[in-house]
Length: 265
Image 1 (spheres, rainbow, N blue to C red):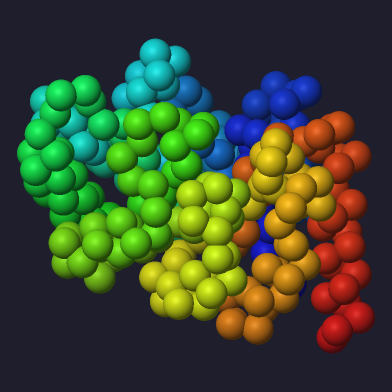
Image 2: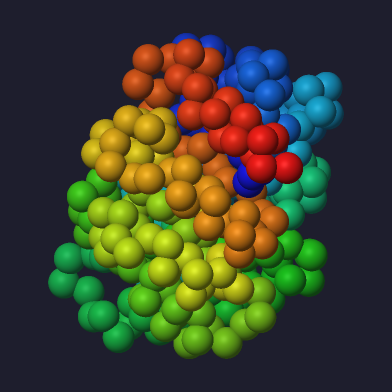
């Protein structure tokens, strides 16, 4: 069975953020992820991880003004200095939190921008980040996202992510494969995972439609989990979904996966 990490941005929203660590541990999670740690003192977050015996498995680079609708700045030619500063800040947090990998949301395509300029900016920024993170011993990831939830997002398919990795030319750039986003954009989930597994460093899940917990929509998650096991995927699976009822009440899918794994063993 894959290792499941609670996404504390999406789960346990009935609690204050710092109280979500204990709730996740109580429900049996051993790892957590979230979008951004930067609103909190990194030592406070590290203490919550330690006291609840949790691994920090992922967070994102700073992504600009989130409240204003920005979803990353890596493609913006006039924000290169800000991007590079954000890489340094993310590394500081990751080292304190013991986080082995960082994800980059590349951003939305600005109206009227030259695609060649955007591509060149993005590739140069990712080269910079991949090198800096490698020197820090941290894996670097990029994530394709669907254009229904984030209209105008630049990186939208696994094929595009592969091309970007090739253009960057680093051995420290991987794909964060979000099953929910890729079901919307391209489908063909299992064959894609099989083909890309050496390039996938992290998986995230939610069902479709609705972005709720597994078992509420069209995706055959037992088959997806079995495939990950069969392929030998040893990374984390981040639970980045919107609970349909409540987080703890909606974890039956995870209990079922754990029971299935026990029987198979």
